[in-house]
Image 1 (tube, rainbow, N blue to C red):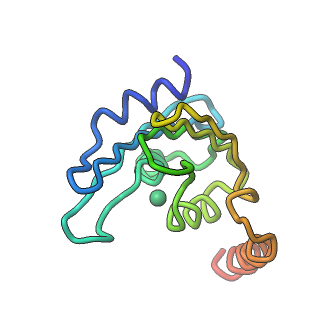
Image 2 (cartoon, helix red, strand yellow):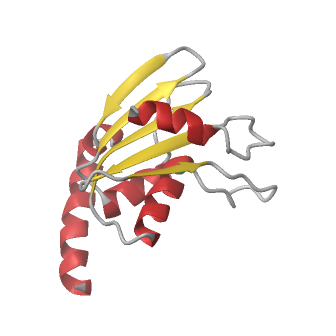
Length: 139
Ligand SMILES: [Zn+2]
């Protein structure tokens, strides 16, 4: 099944009573297995997990470390892109990943890279350099 369809199925498990924005994600690993995630909200604002991070963390908890593609599906007002926290997680854990999003509100599909998520080229480059330095320090 296509990754985007698996993200749609994962979306059905979303817990989003506050925003009503249900999100599903399906993550493809380098070796070909797939992990899914959905968003889970909490009354305490900020104490939520996004679908894409849920999928990445679930995969990592299952010993996966290399990811090639992630599909994200939601009914979102506006452009559907990973949030700032997810962007940081992707930068940290899978900076080369291909990101595909499908917004069910307008059926718009986007294909993004991490670089494109950073609309400011300097912040992307600073983040890349920082990541290399920190990896060397903490190895
Ligand atoms: Zn997020």
